[in-house]
Length: 280
Image (cartoon, rainbow, N blue to C red):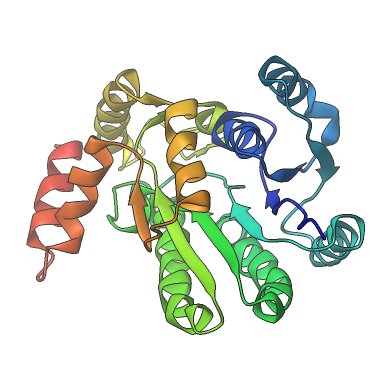
């Protein structure tokens, strides 16, 4: 009996890294279920798939909706026989310091970047555990290792999801399931267009205005030299398919260097000292 091709479920595929990851996994021979909140926005994905000569199963999935997530995973298992690879890519950014953030905005970051990831992962684990194999790859950020000014809610959610996945990794490995995180740095994509900005409607006497302006100038420079979504997606595909898996992946030399600030920073002075210069 011929074994079916591995099935990958990828979230957030309407553009950017998710789009290129879905196409890249299909080119690698996997059956790919590419999901997005609104399938009316699937034109770019379908065009990229056609140009690559691959087929994708495009479906609607809002990771913040528990009922839709449960139904989506059940439907993929019913239609394709299982889920061997989960790529948690859907995400959302926010630029604001804590005093500027409402409870609703904090919750929004957790819902998309943390709780949605936890929900999808929990849903696929029983099938992977029963099969004795599987991959869970979560796209976090360098902001999941290094806290950054005016990224309080975003980095908080990304720190949380990295802690979740690092805690899960050894337990999942006991059942043959590999858990990894991928940490992109600055990536040229539509992600930045969906970022909540604290300076929208800010008053002239905003005490944070000067600090935020300095941060935004520095960030604009970083994105001027950003890697492409396709380059970052190549690392995600490698993490999902390699014969030599590991827990943590960075998508560029710059991301590697930046994450190293925190991972070797036992007292926190290197990170705080470096990021303080961003708002000077």
